[in-house]
Length: 447
Image (tube, rainbow, N blue to C red; front, side, top):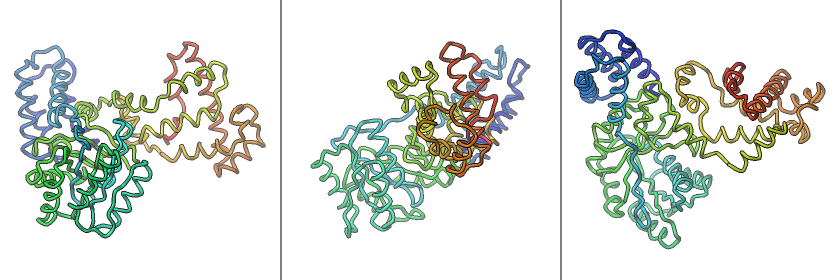
């Protein structure tokens, strides 16, 4: 997402970077290019026009033309305006109720059911809540079954009433059930349609009036661009919802919905879906998204994801093993699992400043980790602890057992030995060449 927009914005701002002389004329030309870039990303025309007008006014008002590095100052203004356009600051959830009631709305296919389960998982892990998922889509049996499966994956109870076709009754009964069984958050998944219709809007309105939710979230597929914004407006006019959830941001979305929706409906984007895994849900931070759009990475989110998987006790044990040169393949497997939990590898690396563009056309094979795991699992416990005992006959056995070619086994053993050497150097304070050493060769997962 945003790749094409990022390229076009970079091109538009390139001429103004550095120390060259800048005039009002070429600032105006740059604004035209930025407006075209936004329109190409499917941003609402009025939103794009107002945005460039604000940037131009601020640029002239802040005497950018006479500053030492006018291009850099203008980039800062564009960044701040992009962040403001998307909401300025991250918006939280209202969880003040006992229980807190969250009503999920949106069209069919937008990802409501998946988001409901992801939200339950997020509330359990981040907020230490005990959520209850409510199957309120009474028209699509697959939706109820999907919610049950995803609830089981996350260890979240799912409330259903088989045979009851009245979603208002189900929602009310679910809230009573939550109070009786100690659930502090109730997430009500509702039915959607392929398009907005009066029957659908009446139903969601009736549920809203009956349960008085503390949060009403509108879930929208980011791939639908301006259609998403138009649908959001219709829902907001009827429900006055509290926030937006953008799903499928890992797809080929141009970004128009993310950039337009706040300006059109004046409601914040609260969450974004970044993948298919249950953990692939992030709080939306407008300033961080602006960083990524302008190619600055998102190191804060990168660190946050890493910290979520960080185990201080395990790290201390690992340091001791590295110091004694006892770091083995079992330890390596643990590190792989932690990286996988952090999310999509390309998305993760794209958070590192400068890496996003470098990886733009690079094929990152997520299955590569599976190949590495298969090779390691084909080793004996002793071979994993002490890889030095792996001779040619052992290598052939490991290759057969893992179903991978012999050269991949040799390559993994060589890289592992290099990595152990680098880790020991870093442990001894010689880590200044670590990154050069790590990326001098082939990085696992990048072809």
